[in-house]
Length: 300
Image (cartoon, rainbow, N blue to C red; front, side):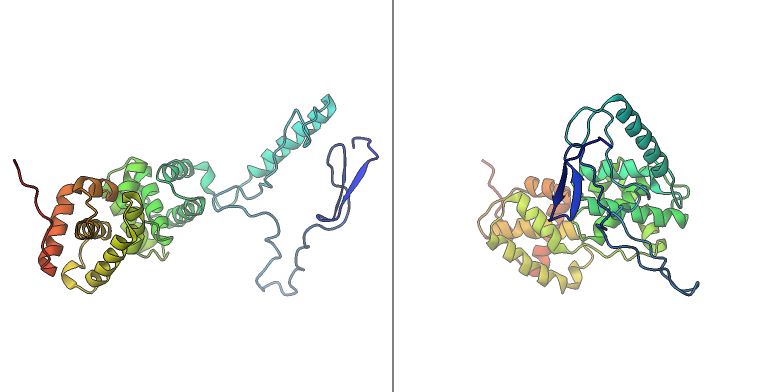
């Protein structure tokens, strides 16, 4: 294509490409061929699935190619007829990737909302992809009928966090999507009941790891809180408390017992609970276990 006679044989990649433009023109197979079609028409498996991975909710025909209209892969400038060819290829690729199946998430504003809200609370890409899967499943079942987009996106993000056992509270997700906590909670209950997906609860130790890291607690305090969590799990009087609220109260009590003072304001800010909730939960734990509370500072 570039009228060059200099070819390079790569023994590692098993390729023969041009030294000028980088074009691979060896007819040797780089990837395995697709499996043969099944003999019976009713059997499962069509031989599809060969090619690059496409995240859920993404375009089905995207090859991940980046076509530049000014320079080639080695940074050299293209002449006018090569620029015209690449412009044509770019239009063809955009036209092919625009063809979608099953009404994907790309044509709705939900995907952009999931991306922006998930990045604001530090969620990895695999969790965002799982949130898109939950959103698509719930939308196909008609669970979002009559509900706002922020509450629907928040419910799917919270469900994805719980499926991956990420310590994110409902209030944090609601603040990220700009909706009320009560609305996101009601929508999440509808998604949990009607989506058919397993949405387990987040363990208390996941919140302990996150809060202890942000509060810079020592391993001794962490082990003390883990022992207290095991004791609280078997106590019926503490079973109805929220996980992050209970962890915050136990962290506050364990830090006081081990001489690592952390104020209620610091623990409440990290755990996303109010100081009133932290104080009441701490007093309930002290009352149930008959433990003496931390000394109250004397007023001068």
